[in-house]
View 1 (cartoon, rainbow, N blue to C red):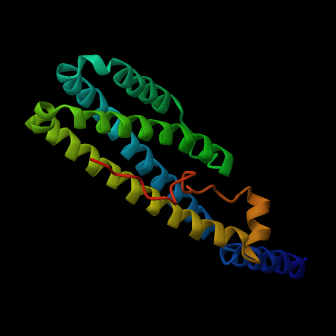
View 2: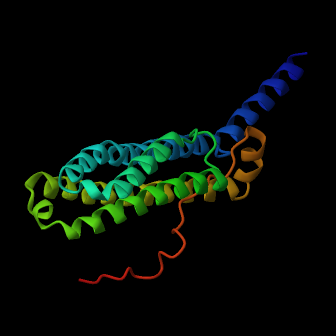
Length: 194
């Protein structure tokens, strides 16, 4: 009887040590890191969405006849802020949907900023210059946060897909996460003409 208890205790201890070295804790830690990085990506996009109304109102004052461009920016912002992804479901498809809406928003902003070239008074306006600098800084933050997120996902996906972690990942429901990819056509430099 004592021998049987000893063997059960020994097996339990062996199982505990095995689970500890199986990578489960590493996967949990990396999964939480990915979720944190995703939150920072959303934070950067939200910052941009919050700045846009100020930019639109500044431009409206100087460019009333650009109403269609301004309306497109407002609509793109509304659409971009309505698409969210649960941090527990960061699949390739969900990331692609999120990115598509954000790319449309970026395109609207680009058209708005391009239309400003026709308004020398607005281009010289200090408020507009500051908002434009804020948007540029925000776009850089978005790029940085997306890169950081992709790096965390790469590390997580490598852990989850590597043997023997892939066995434990399957048992505990850890799945590979989606990454951001370049938008179609981003491999070509934009044309700048004056």
